[in-house]
Amino acid sequence: MENILIERFDNLAIITINRPEKLNALNKATILELHEAFKLLNNDVTIKAIILTGSGEKAFVAGADISEFANFSVEDGGKLAAKGQELLFDFVQNLTTPVIAAVNGFALGGGLELAMACHFRIASTNAKMGLPEVTLGVIPGYGGTQRLAQLVGKGRAMEMIMTASMIDAQTAKDYGLVNHVVEQAELVSFAKEIALKITKNSSTAIAKAIGAINANFEDGTNGYQVEIENFGACFGTEDFKEGTTAFLEKRKAIFK
Image (cartoon, rainbow, N blue to C red; front, side, top):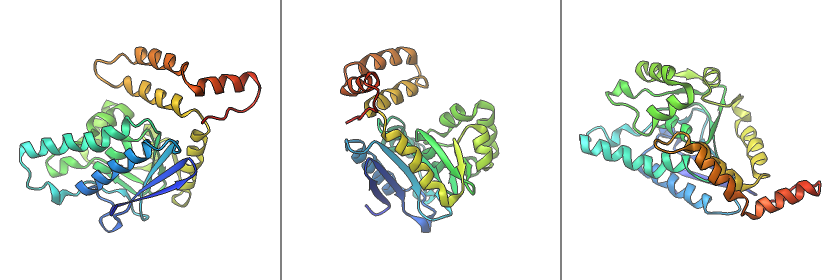
């Protein structure tokens, strides 16, 4: 892969978007490579958590590669958004392996949309986030209008999108957009600490939890019913047998 790097540490993987000369901007090739990387790692039973970050100190992802779509038609624009959501943004949101965004520096436009598609976010103190698409005469097309409102509320999402303003890391934490803010030098190690806590727990249960939580935000889906179904399904897993047995035997569970 030309635009991303993959590192593995036991049950943990780190994907780094590696286009520092372009501030890690998302082009078609990078979106496709990210799709393949997430698909590969999600199918690897040894990987129990994924961290996504950007190379360099300036940007997580500074946005989409505008030169690729500056001359698009209405039809082309619609296809661009639909394909991007299918290949990457919706794909990441619904991945059964937990994905943590380690947001270093700028996360703008498609970059913030990608971070929001991850299951939760950690930011460096120098992070700046925003959806500036209206300055280009377009709106966020990779789920930004939906996920931002879900995370920070309708009013704040309206203001951020309409003003095209950036917010700093602490404001993002106050808004509920990120869970933690740490110094940039500590960002990946802090994300690893959280990821390692995740890897000690049941991957099958976590996958079911992700599905149940996401169901609450799907039109026409009863999240409570999905929770009931996923809760019941857990009872048929080896992890459930191990977890309950370990509890009764007063030892730590070893999930395989």
